[in-house]
Amino acid sequence: MKSPAEARRILQQLEAQHPGADTALHHRNAFELLVATILSAQSTDARVNLVTPELFRRYPDARRLAKATREVLEPLIHATGFFRQKSRSLLGMAQALVDDHGGEVPADMKALTALPGVGRKTANVVLGHALGVPGLPVDRHVLRVSNRIGLAESDDAEEVERQLGAVLPKDRWTLSSDVLILHGREICRPKPLCEKCAVRTECDYYQSHTP
Image 1 (cartoon, helix red, strand yellow):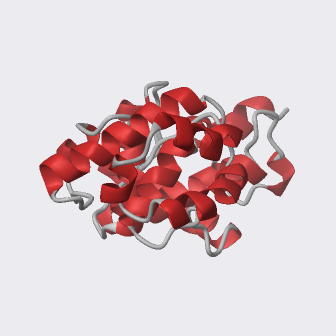
Image 2: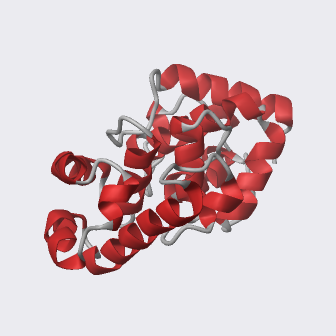
C-alpha cells in the first residue's frame, strides 16, 4: 500500500482533477441528508433528488415523518426502488430520533448506526456533510478506486475506511471520499478510462495492466 505521504499526494492530484467534489444529494439539513442517503441505497442520486422535494414538503422533520403511514409514504419513494424496505427504515429511523434524540440527528457514529436503516456509510455521509464531524464514507466506488490505486487492500468497506483513515488527515476524510467517488464514477469505472486519470503513473492497477 501507499505510504501516508504518497496517499496524500495522490489525493491532492485527484482533488485537482475533480474540483468541487461533494455529495450530489440535495439537502438543507442533517435530517434531509439522512433521509436522502437511506433512499440512495440501490438507487441513483439523481433519482433520489427527484423524489425528495415532495417528500420533504410533506415531512420536513423527524416528528412529522414518524407520524406517516407506509400506505402514504411508499408511493412517494417508489421510484427509488426497494420502497417497502426503505419505508420501514425511514419510519423506524424517524421514530427513534423522536424517542431517543428529541427529534434531532445525533452527531455520533454509534448513535447514528443504532438507527433503523443506518449503516456506517450512511452515518459517515451525514457526519461529514451535515454535522461537521469527520466522516469517510466507503461505497463501491471508493472500494474499487482505493484498491486499484493501492491506497487500501481489502474488499471490506469498514476495513478500507480504517486503512484510508490511517493515512489521511481527519479534516480531509470527507473530501477524499467525495473525490474517490467522483473519480470512480467518471474515470476509474469498472472498465477504467486510464488514459484520462491524473494519477495513472502512481496507480498499481495501471502499472500491472500496461505493457
